[in-house]
Length: 443
Image (tube, helix red, strand yellow):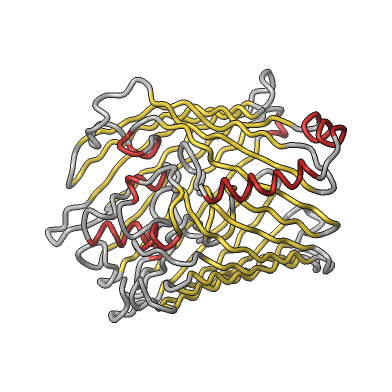
């Protein structure tokens, strides 16, 4: 409500200071955009548990943005998901929760509502919006993305440099976070916290704008203050650094360097490195937080092929709340070694590696891209999720096709195959084969 009042006041100021012609131009120059999405998923569990859960949904979002008046503009977007051909929605062993809203229900809500102001190389955007930063992001992996209430200032006055300052007050979890019922037990809380979501009750918060602290640790806080810098002034090199000060919870530092070059033969190698450091701050609502995560990647592009390998290591500390794992409560998953589903690389003491490759078929006259990967996660006994040290693996493929006959339509088939996602003392593993079909139509 307070958010709506703030935007209403700003909009009122805009209206009172604009002439009728200005207002007419403002809305006549507005535009409607959006995405229609159909998403179907099927996951066959085997091993410690044996069952199949599925879901089919349609939805997406519709967005309206006004034209600009003296640099000012307004925007709003509605998001929704509607299930069809479902079995018993209350049975999580039949209906996959990652495509639907709270209690596996349909939902439509105001996901974006913002005011934007541009002046030269400076842009301010305040209100409900979509964010994509390394440690807080939309994570648009299932039906609906994560969204935020935030106030973001960016500037490009310094050559080849983008500076960002932001304060994020609320988080609206997308549907992907519902896969982990963090309140069920300690192991699920660890899985949730290291996979980009909250410590508690993440399954029942889709689409609801929650205080950042309350979503993460069930304590209201003053939100998350963010500062970032991105530099690309040297050919082939991109550097970025971000600091996230989550008041009374933690401070997270993210740094990354990417460098690529090419030879006359057309071979284009690239390398990258990333580092995350987290420490508890203030009232320490998440307890002791102390972690270091380091990742590296090397690859090469040859003709239409792109091949790479990556490795990472996460620290461990038995005295820390999650044994030294890296906490990521608000989406955002920058790790090079993450799988399509498996994100154990942030668990305490985990050593992970991944190999992946893709091929672009456009040179053959087909708007088609295909890719495959294999990832391995060697978990330490302090991982907090499995009951012992173990190794879990995930493989998968991704096929994306854009038919020439229907402009702006994308058809996608994805699959992942996990083995020993979790292991018990008795050695029983949790395995699954998962298939996804996604149709995106942008307008």
